[in-house]
Length: 213
Length: 221
Image (cartoon, rainbow over all chains, first blue to last red; front, side, top):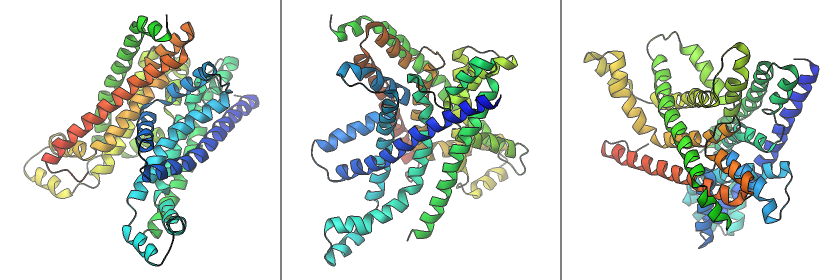
């Protein structure tokens, strides 16, 4: 492999990193929104979100991405590849994140709520000042774990023709006629990316254990 | 003819894809569970020689995306003279990848098992393999059934990746139908329904296993 091939490989890695990064940020935030909506137990909406979570957790990413990218135009929405990819990854990871947030909220101690109400906090102040900071810390390890799952699932975006870190190996081997080195190099780059997340998770876990009461 | 009628007329394609997905899923689920148990057993004992290389293998699998492994077997290995069909490469990749995950799940539960029963079993004259098979493994399976079920659903979803290395499974069926008749939405809705059904069936199976577990006193897992 020459410098050119490495350049292509790094470009692929960048594509994987930014698409996953945007989906992670959107997914963590939307997951929180979905979890809060489900916590409010609004009739009909609650069942709808429950069905969405069950469906999104059962649908393979590849299928979801093909579905969004191919059926967008028939609904009159023209999506470019990156948008479709981000939409699919976000829809997928939001469902998992929503469950992580929800279980953290459900396990939150009731005494603190009672104490907050007793000193006259409004529900919003209680949520923002007391509940949220603690649940962020306790659910961080699980959220980071889900992030590494997202990066591991991200090669699915190759199916609609995005040249990510997996698909770029085909490009390189089309020139060099030797597919093995680029695939191994791509594997090493993935390991570096996911290793970074796992390392972050370990730190998050240690922090969570220290702050857990 | 409406779009749904076209799909009904070509139901054979769906059935074939569904059959292929189900076959690939069942073969790889069984084999990767066996591989996971074997990996765990090889890391048992007082001073297992294989412990460090297996640890490295499991950690490597946990840091790699599944598709890159499938690429390695399907596109990479022919250049060192090992040729496999897309089907063989896909199943092999699924088995090795998920075998490592199963081993890790079982190991996580294994280290919480008390050593008392192990000592009791050895005092009763159990050999290590029999003890592992009769005493340790059944407990681990019942304890980890929840995580195990999640892993099986991940395995099911990973079979869809095989469409990229040209295996004719369920997603490939939807893809080819949608490009032939240009009805992507309906075709994919049907296929997503199929995946949902399999997942729900798996969850139901795990719940059933949970009832067995509860009867035997493993309701803490």
